[in-house]
Length: 79
Image (cartoon, helix red, strand yellow):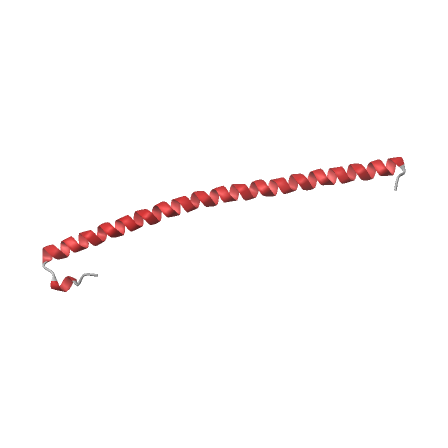
């Protein structure tokens, strides 16, 4: 950091303008990063929901298959 107390008024203004510009660039970078991360989180949520739906479908199909097999065995008198 520059010691502003030893600078002239015009130099102080130039230093401050430069610092503000640097801060603005950093804020823009942080904003872009936050937006990208928000999109990535949304994509991850969708993938997790699809995975949960797939597990439910497999469980339902397995239940129907096991139930059908049990009924078939019962009707045929098999053990």
